[in-house]
Length: 214
Image (tube, rainbow, N blue to C red; front, side, top):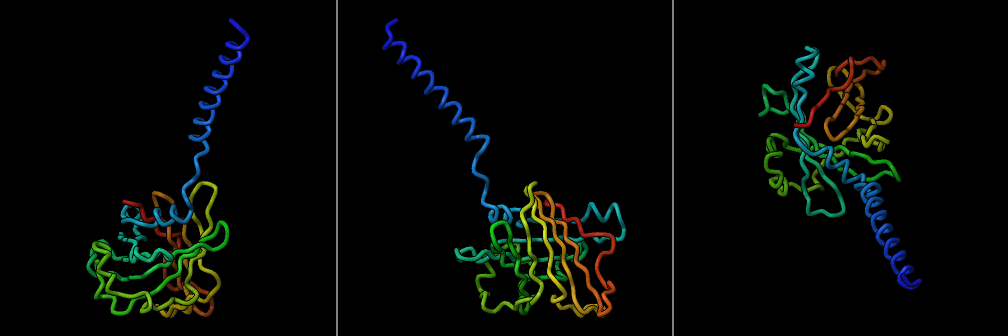
């Protein structure tokens, strides 16, 4: 074999080896999904606390539905949220709109809004486009109730409200707090109400509600 042929064979083998290495590296170090898109994906869906309620009678069987709305707005990410007991799904006790956005390099925030005439929109998660009739300008901001989240090393998102600015008057409360953990399989949410003495007056006392994604 001539030196020229030997050189070409070596170059060819090196090229094959380099290509194989690049393919392997591409699979192992693939660009991770955009964290904001990942958070929105985790939050979207139907959730149930049935399993938790069967294990502990202090927790109710709650159904939680979250859907993207106003998807034509490419500058913002909006979610419609509806929450009701399993026994009375047609009478949700909470209807909200969340605006989810970045907050720094690894942070995110879920800004909470209420909607007027909420009974008009019961079941909107089934056909989210019905809310196209409603405009973001009509939303009512829940001051101090924004949940600030951080992406964790395991791919989950954890966060909470800040301070005592989320006003609540339920059962003599002065303010409310929310602590949240979000994964691809579960949304763990702990909402609590406190009076002016910082005594808890509503909400779970043992820990958050474990909403399993259906």
